[in-house]
Length: 264
Image (cartoon, rainbow, N blue to C red; front, side, top):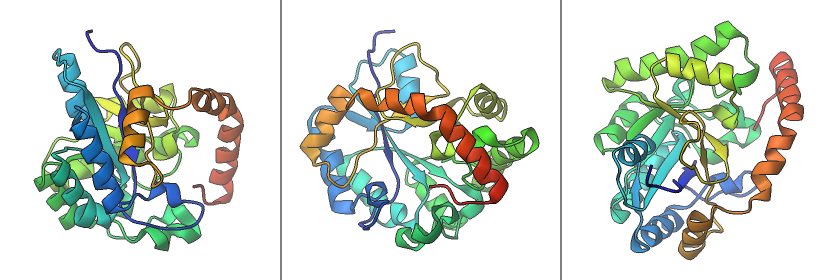
């Protein structure tokens, strides 16, 4: 391979909110600034599947994969115009079981994010040239689900997206980022050919196509800040610390599954 790294960006809501989840919402003006700065710096902004295809074909462009999780309505009203202003493409991962409703997994903070796209609005997003990816049915951490529930979360959501939108769904985003070999195998078997996690680092040649890591822009990142983040990959200590903490978090997620507690 003739490429060294693929930066992938993970956005959520295109809005401005306060509170502990404020980093998951980037206002439209800031999003436009960030994307435009990347384009001006010589990066080509595309969706994740397109980025991987281009790299496989030997493309030497400086690529950045742009992704949005969950599928909030403000992606259609504010995100799509920001992408168009920057000449960018993207992948939107839809939480299929919540379309037209609130992001129930956010608990008491869900009203701050507004409702998710309806099926009709999701079709509008696809018609605007945005890749539609799968974000499961109910946005529960998949690595602690029993086999039957895991299968339903991945297969049913994939098939429903393809049938209702009449398009191929190639990419998957793990809810909360959690995955493992069992989850990745199920995602592949359902018909996806790539998937993404959180990771907070750059994707490199030879790494798992079903666990592409992403960097998270925040409202505090200026356009110049994001160019720097993309070029360097951010602090290297964060991915290491998160990896060390995974066993303890897996136990916490299993407890949450049994008790019905909300995870954010």
